[in-house]
Image (cartoon, rainbow, N blue to C red; front, side):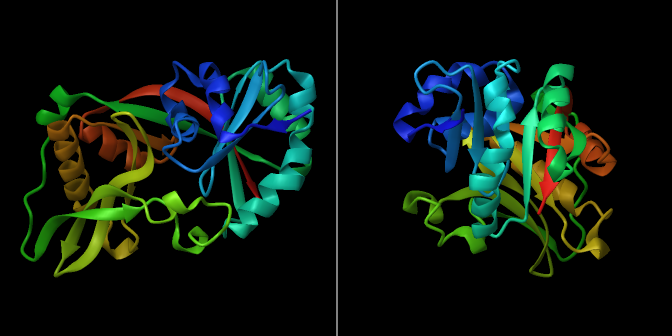
Length: 266
């Protein structure tokens, strides 16, 4: 059986997500730093839990042998995950779990009718010493960097009743690289943060501006600012996203964790 916790009960599953760096988004939900929902097998003595950061992704952690909970995941998908995702303007759902055969076997079996796509992601952690030795490309003519505020909730989801009012206008920080006053790259916190740690998001939307160093410029500014202010950026990338990994490692990030992610589209 799967039951939902009230926000005042989120602390009951904190121990299930401790000690793993890539669980930061789950902990952001548990600490009420990001909107989310939490589902457990037993509200009084939870053995397994799913922490879902709304508009983003979810994490399952705990006892993989809690069979009744795992077997009810399709029901959770049908009743809550799929309709809520669609209301938030999201036609996909991602579930993160440990790179453990027991977890992967069970999840793939119970979610088989959703045809989940499995991939692997890496979490990289900044080494400040390596960053200080990294090179930043000189700014060419017409290029500048500016600090920006980034909404943590996508535009299409801000008016949903699923998102509490306190989060609808909340922002995170980042740095934009501008070419002739037009934004060509952005690197910043994606809003998934707790304490001094936050997840990094980087993008160069227009393919014509990629491979020109703009993302490096924005990312270097973000990391430098984070170090000055005592923040700890965490970089996450698909295992086969070589461009993102090359950028992160060039800035002084080092691989720390590898884990399994299941993606369902609907």
